Image 1 (cartoon, protein in one colour):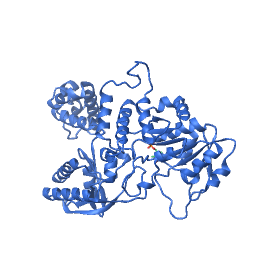
Image 2 (cartoon, rainbow, N blue to C red; image 1 turned 90 degrees about the horizontal axis):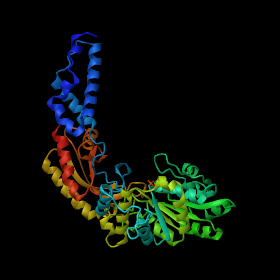
Image 3 (tube, rainbow, N blue to C red; image 1 turned 90 degrees about the vertical axis):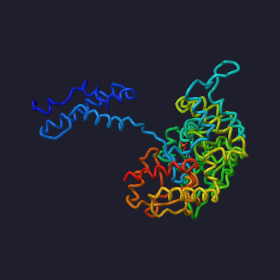
Image 4 (tube, rainbow, N blue to C red; image 1 turned 120 degrees about the vertical axis):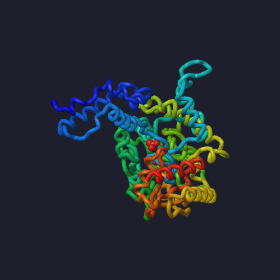
Length: 465
Ligand SMILES: *Cc1c(COP(=O)(O)O)cnc(C)c1O
C-alpha cells in the first residue's frame, strides 16, 4: 500500500498532542485514549485502502476531535438518574423501590468506609452479619428468628433446600408461577433438590387435595402468593390459615412465600389482598419469605422469618455464603426496618408507601402545578391535566388499576414515539407513558422536587429540534 493518503495519516503521538485529546487525558487516562486513536486510525486505513480517493478529514486536529467525541460517548456511565413519570411505583426495570433517605445514607456510610459488619463491638469477637437485622425483623413480624439473603428468589431456593431437600413439597397447580426473567417455581424446586408435588387444578385447589397428597416423604406445604397474576371467575384456593392448620395436624412445616411483603396496612385499593407476613407468622407458619424492595420499600433483599430451628438450618447451608447480603444493602435494610417499627410515621418515611397512599387531592394539586409550568415554557401542545389509571407494579396488586392524576401533552413538531425516546435518552432520563398519541406524566411517581427537572428536560428536548 503506497498511496499518498495512507502515508499521510498522522502518527499517534502527533494526535495525542492536539487540544481535544489533551483535555481528555486527565479524566480517561492515556492508555484508553491511545487505544481509541489506534482504533480510529485502523478504520481510516481500511477505508482508504478500499478507495484512496475518499475525501476524509485526516489532519491531526480533526482526528483528535473525532476521537474525543467517540471517547465522550463510549465512556459515559451506563447507569444514570431516571425521573420516573410512568406512575408505576415498583418499576423493576427502574430499580424497583426507591429507598428512604435514612436507608440511602446508611448504604453510603457502609460503602464509603468500614463498618462493624461481622464483629461484636462490645466483645471485639466475630459475630454474624445477620445480627444487624435479625432483631428488628423479629420485632416487626413477632417471630422467633430471621435471616436475609440477596432477594426473594434466593430465599425460595435456600428455604426449600434447607427444609425439603429430597422430600416432596406440596403446592397448588394454581401457584406454579413464573416470577420473571424465566425464573419459574418448578425450576426453583429442581435447583433446591425438592420434589414438586402439584395438587388441584389451575383454578381450583381445595384443602382435601393437599391432605390426600401427604405421605411419608412430604417435606413441606408451600403457599406461593400469585403476585403477578390473578385468576378470575370460577376459582377456589386454600387460605394460609387452612394450610397452617393442616400442617399442624400432620406435623409438616408450612412455608409462605408472601412475595411483596405488605407489612404495613395501607389505605390503597386492593392492598388488603396482599399477604401480610405478620399475619402468617401470627397464624403459625414455620417460615415466611418476602422481598425487601417491594412493599417493604427497602433495598433488594430476601427476608426469611420464622422458627428458630429452621433459620439455624438455613444459615448453616453452604448456599448462605453465596446468597448473603452485602454490607450496603444490610445497612439500608436495617434503617428501613427501623422506620417500619414506628407505625405512625412509616407510610410517610418510606417513599414506596408514600407514593402508594398519596391522596387524589394531593395528586391533583401536583398535576395543576405541572400543567401550569408546561404551559409557561410554551413548546408543548394540548397540555391537559386529567384523572387516569396507574399500576403499583413489581408484581404487586396485578389487577388493581389505581386512579391517579396525570398531565398529558404532545409536540407540534415531533411525533410522540420520537419525543418519548428523546425524553428517555435525556440527562437525567425521563420515563413517561404514552396514551392516545400523547406523552403522559403520572404525578404519583413524580416527586415535588422532580417537577421542575421534568419540565426542564421537556424544554431541552423540544427546543433543540
Ligand atoms: C417478587 C416475588 C418473588 C421474587 O422476589 P425477588 O426479590 O424479586 O427475587 C418471589 N415470589 C413471589 C411470590 C414474588 O412476588
